[in-house]
Image (cartoon, rainbow, N blue to C red; front, side, top):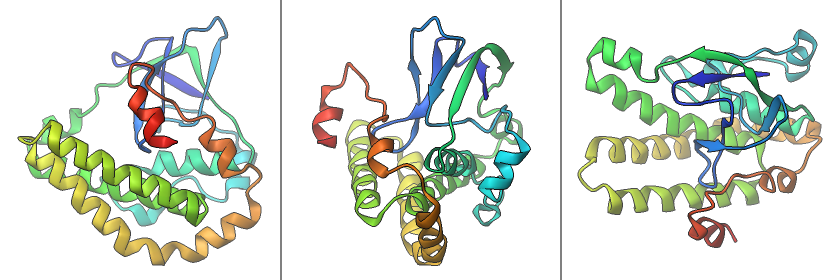
Length: 212
């Protein structure tokens, strides 16, 4: 169970996994008290101890400090092992993203955080998906970076951090082959089940075209 994060979210907005394998905020209008999602933000959530024992571990310590992506790894393992994730509309916390970067006042910290996020998110998908499915996500990430370069050519720092992060992930992937093989044996849900729940921006039909 995950809390709604103010001010970026409100009770009808959740964080979920997008077509490009990153985390976006989506509006889901429903009268239900809990909104299902594929992603549990690590800012504020509850998880049962017996379920955590089933998952074997909470966060992957190999991701390092100031890394990000640990909550995506946790979310993927939860989904594929048959668990459910939901945002509780009545549970709200204030979380001002990027506050730690501003307090430190160091641009290099933000660069490193974005780089590590791209690296760890890519590794998380590699650990959870079959090779065929992972290649789809990997290609989509390359497309995303290329489109971002064209749309925001002056945002050199962020664009460069994503490229380096993806390159680092590519180098590290062989280190996670055994973990991937072990996880494949205990997966309950299929990759197709996962992809069918992907979120698409209704205003961007190009996203559905790209995925198909």
